[in-house]
Image (cartoon, rainbow, N blue to C red):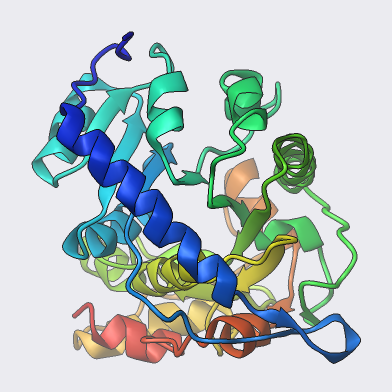
Length: 332
């Protein structure tokens, strides 16, 4: 049996556990949201605890939050990272880490019951689809496939609300690449005969990555662009949404917006973060006059409020941090 480089799978016991996990993980599919009137899905409760083996490709900030939850429930998590140093960190968290690109993912994929990709597309396309994509297209055994995308696929709506049925109209190159990647994943999963679950994430924050940290570090800026609003999501709630979907996969696949209940101007977060730690906020800067990199300026090219009713209605999610005030307060 060939082993992927930099990966040391456990012996037959692991394989038996993985097989049992596949049986358990497949069971919630029988309790997946059933079709309701008008194409909606009606949420039903899984009837048994779920466990299995997750292969997480591009195991970053959001995926690590999910892995912590899964490992506590007895899951096996295999994950890829780009460096040996990071692989060592992940192993310390209980994850079976693989350095990829540079390793063969066919065996980990064969042992996985669930697959999540967090890898963003580049100028040449999605590197996962360009690499192990054909193996994924043949992975008919998977109980669930998830892809982390972005709300940037919707483009600019002048502050209006979008939902999962809003036509995709990206206005940035990043957004256009994401649309192409979503389509590529849809095609690969269609060839495999497995359903794809797409999660369009709003701006992510959480421990070590938030407005309070930036205010404390003196790097926060209050850029003001009239009418500009962003949606955002705490990383713990991303993990919650992913776990809920894994427990109730939709046979035909599904798209979910993942955001909190309170879109807001970005400067409001900085003002609130400063108040939480008792310091003066940085001065306001007019967007038109502010010195910003092209990348930073591009984030202000789109303004929209993202609707999240589907994750509540179909997955039964109750957000731990329904707005930035609750999320930032927990991070002080």
